[in-house]
Length: 255
Image 1: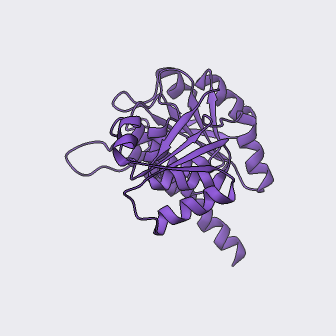
Image 2: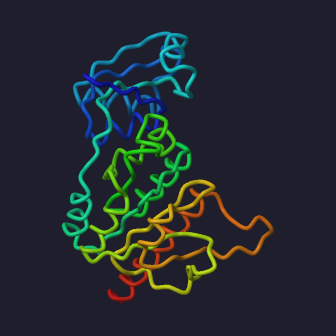
């Protein structure tokens, strides 16, 4: 029976709220005050019928190898990935044009967590990640996303290019974010369409075959000396920009 140990107050709280995993045991440090978020976590665990254990902080430190656990840990089943089709079904059920995020072999848990948090905030219908040579949805990623990933549909695919082709056959435009001479400025394109936004790996960007399979590329305007943005920052700006375009369009239609 595989087990994961989630840590951090927001991550643990959202896992308890979402109830998408099998919740096995909540561990709370005796040194923390059981008020605020900790009190909410305990209440959620009690409502879910999860056993609660209180231990010394040093024991928690040893178990989590000095991770910033904030005095709380939740023992659960592994992250519940979904099939790609479920992400498409979510858009159809909500009667919305699809909004998906594709992560092309990102390696940094903090970057992935930041992107997942943004994706959840703008109501993405799903996130797609490759099953090899990329960060999976680990406890570190859950913590970096402040638990947002517990409310997201994440599909892990064998081949990202094949997943892109599946999306395109379903009528979804696949757009890559890349600082490239052939990329269009993000303000010059209409992203109010069924959209899958591809974010490339830190440093190397998108793989060649992934880039070639995109319907078109977009880039963010850069006027400073650095020349590019961190993958998580750039991706968050781009997907939020896409959401704002469709939100503005919906507001105008209702006016």
